[in-house]
Length: 134
Image (cartoon, rainbow, N blue to C red; front, side):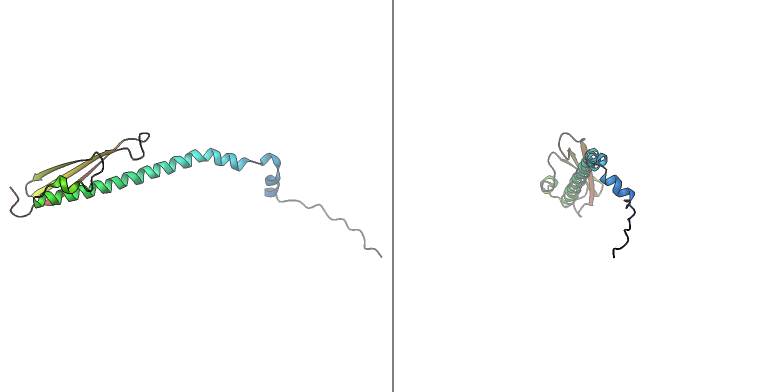
């Protein structure tokens, strides 16, 4: 004997699958990614610019510290600071009472000519060694 013929109710798909399977919806993720990609690239470039600028600031601080200590000891501050100086940087050394002050100024464009110019300045002070003061 044959089993009674039972009909199955039609299965309904969840709404999210329906939108995903709809041929009219195809390619939207690609279009959204293409629209957001320039913003992602701009944020990454800004991040690289900032990291490069911070690296330059660290080099300028090292150069200023070395120059101030060298001036306080009576050595040539420019020769000592040259190892740390970025390209195009200048060192100005002065004595204020019993202190040696060094100021390093470095102009730069961290990612080339398309980025804004930036001038990094670092200052360091060291006490003069006894017998070297005014």
